[in-house]
Length: 183
Image 1 (cartoon, rainbow, N blue to C red):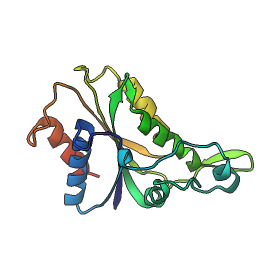
Image 2: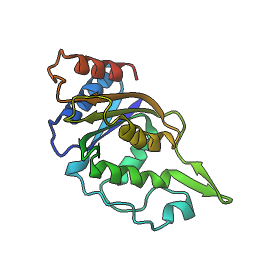
Image 3: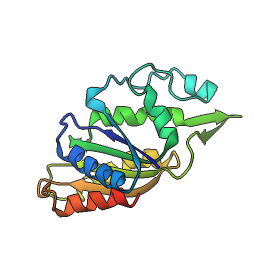
């Protein structure tokens, strides 16, 4: 199975990216193919509301660094998204990325339909300074539900707080590895 990951931290070794990479290590060890996109290193534009996707039931036509992502997403059995928490919400780059999935809702005879194959497994990884894992849960669920509205299935949400160690043998890293192995 192909596993696609989109890492939304500007810090390559930040907490959310580190945990996501541990999920991917578990996925690789389970024999899955892994593709990684690091948004901070990419030229990605926001949705331009051009309407081409709706008129033609096609992937986004913007010519930026997400172009190969759409093909990977269609071929994937799992999507891993990770982001730090900025101002009580998922980072702005990741919200812009989420908005680009507008193209995954097609239109036929005035009715919307999902253009992705159903059942793509979704794992969300978020890091926050607040020590209470539940503090921003509703905000993270709002974000993940946009993907679930495209027929993805939420498998797991991992929230890292300032109280969680990123040492290889820590509970959160073990949880991440097992999440990847169990995809």
